[in-house]
View 1 (cartoon, rainbow over the protein chains, first blue to last red):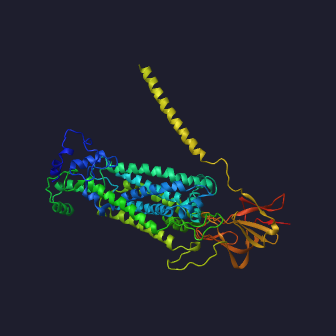
View 2: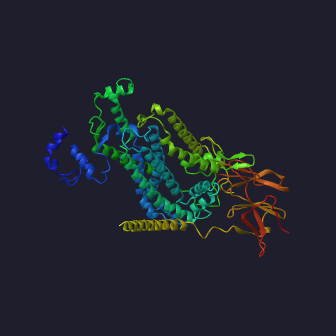
View 3: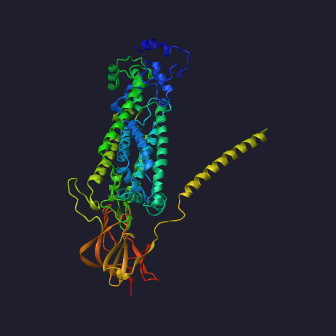
Amino acid sequence: MREDAVSATPKNDAPQTQAPGVHPRPFWSLRPQSDRQSGDAVTSNFLLHWFPAKSFKASLAWGYSFWLGTTSAALLLLLTLSGLPLLFLYIPSVERAYASVKDIEYVVAFGAWIRAVHRLSAHLMVAVVFLHLVRVFLTGAYKNGAGQGQKREWNWVIGVGMLLLTLFLSFTGYLLPWDQLAYWAITVGTNIASSVPMVGASVRELLLGGRTIDQATLIRFYVLHCIFLPAGLGVLFLYHMWRVRKDGGLAKADHVALLAEKRPTEPSESKTYTLLGVARGTAPTVRTVSLEAPDTTVNSIPDLTRRLAIVILGTIAVVSMLSVFVHAPLEEPANPLITPNPTKAPWYFLWLQEVVTDTTIHLGSFTINGAFLGGVLLPSFLVALALAWPWLDRSPGVSAGVWFAASRKRQNAVFIAVVVLILILTFVGTFMRGPYWHFYWPWQQWPELPARI
Amino acid sequence: MSNGDNRREFLIKVGIGGGLAALAGQGIASLRSLVPNVSYDAPTTVKLGPPAEFPDGLKFLPDERLFVFRDGNTFHAISAVCTHLGCTVRAEALSQPETKTVDGKPLRLTHRFLCPCHGSKYSGDGGNISGPAPKPLAWCHLSLAPDDGQLVADLARPVERDFRLTVG
């Protein structure tokens, strides 16, 4: 049928002698009439040139990846877009920062909405990037499968780096309004750094540009937030996507390929393979894993691009609408003299705050500061473990790209346990800690305490 | 021939080396410029006011984050900076003040201290009782200014818990 479409439009596609990408039509088509047009759209469009001409149906499935990576990228795009006007409106000075944010909130046209979009996207991005990591782990998608020269583990490493950058971006943005919330969250956050033995105090001083949180700190966090961290994230993002292509697409694709390869060599022992083989009605002679296999692939344009558009535009639409209702808070101006009670870090660090509260250890006269144990050692250990995990995971390549693969049962269980523990601690820190960090049930009333000493 | 090759290779190395050295110099200079040479932080030695203006018992000085205690004509000062993560602790008056021997000297305890951030508790002498605080609250050195007789606190100079300033 598609061949007919080609002959029906001979004017556009007839000259077979032309090199790909050089064709009479000045624009590519997002609604290609033929495979040729579809391929041309990939090669001649700058934005699409890094896409494959064909995509695996299985990789595009909503239920496999939940498109969390694309959603993160869409949120990053939205953060960049909403950040640009804020860049014009915000003044990174201790005297004027709070007033300029207040202006954005109450005076500037659409200012409150733009700020709400920026803040909501930031919070969502932390959550979605984390969920993306969870998805990649549970599907074993950092594992190399069928392809030659795959280095998926490195993309996992890049991904962990991007999660850390996302957290740091969010954290640096937290200080900028220069209100009480910001000031004390940063006080607690940077004091964790100073609990590192030997170098801690110097690290904190370098971070703050002095011994107290002041103008030097604000401008440091501002430049990190607006230039260095976004640039770093952008570079890693591009490399992340390039690696996805170099590694042969999503790990799901490998899974499909491995199944196809195994079929002739495994006659009837493995039920899984046999069942799938029967279901797909392919002869045992089919060894091909090539992208041309018509039953497993579709043209990237429009099938991949359509879904990309749905996810990206959908993300933007949802955040835009939510931001009308969810306003970004602005508390009293930062006051170094008054510590709010309770003082809480941003929610994604509250599991750590919960840990630093509980981990000070007294061994006789010897004391280990919980800030060091829970604030430095534990997160460093978790990150190091995450970075090393692709090399520690010894499960076979067939478990790449499969949700809850049987051969990865134990590590998945441990991973889920860690994730659940982090979520529980986050929940406790967010909803069950009142004045003086005392425990309260969410429905319990906090006691009335004087706001000032 | 081989001489020319050697010379060429040598010059290539000099060129690459020079370029890398310049790059490293730029990097080092950029990073070093971020380490402040001058501190505009508040001074650590501060005048607190004439001793006579301090009430008997406790006075909290928010700017210095310091509790100043007066018992007759003796003074001592305890920092309000929590030793866990640097939040400002709050003083809570005890219903029944008690006198305890601290480091060999009697001390009247009128308050205890609570941290709003992570729930650390300190006794009236600054000792860490519970919560994540790893150390007792610091005691600060007090003196009288030679020029006008004001009380002077040296926030950067911790002292033992038997320190008292007696104003005669």
